[in-house]
Image (cartoon, rainbow, N blue to C red; front, side, top):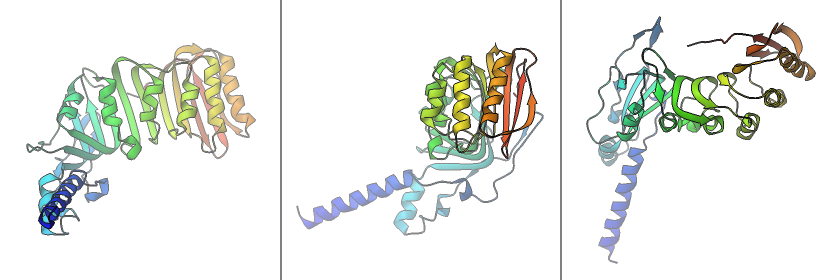
Length: 309
């Protein structure tokens, strides 16, 4: 091979590598200063338009004229804001890039309302991605109905830090889904609110939690359908952790006996917790709430469902 051919191949390799680097350009919430504040008061949304990121502001664009060209041409279109709000399948106050690039929406909170099956799939097919500290999918007028593939599309980057602060899901899955399939996508967030219809928790719930290890520090699960013995296995696992969840709440699909509430409280006392607050179930209960702080535990049991959406 001649030196000219070698040089040409090397240049081609170098350019292809730069293109790939630009396509995978690193991004963080802190890349944009003074992210606009968002407000969600009494159902009224106020937000500023999402700000497009100028590729010339990338620190890599200043390396050389070639980097400037490649970054400008191949870097994804980034849009930043305090709130990324998607209503009825439309991103509010944002015009997607029309060039053949990925569009990445980046905000402190990414919020979906009234999502119907196929809407999130459209974003996937058109290479629109969402990145933020918190994710909220909620029912508003028609409700949010999504497929598991659509939910996975939104959550697949959680293990890399996406939506690591807070995930709140108030929606209906189009088909029943095992908890064991869903939990690996949720376990790393700090605060979790899981009010999803069609989640089947199953009798292996304790094993699923043990296998995946990470537990949100604050979580609420709705529609939990496990036996009394499995629930006690879950409590055994929680009290065995060196760093336990500080607050959790289960809404059960079926009522639980008074004696089960007493057994749960006794398990915390058995590992050295002192009595702080205990609301015993006067009759079979459907909701249990546990709060733990400074080696003290609060246990409450109610015979009605508690809703937060």
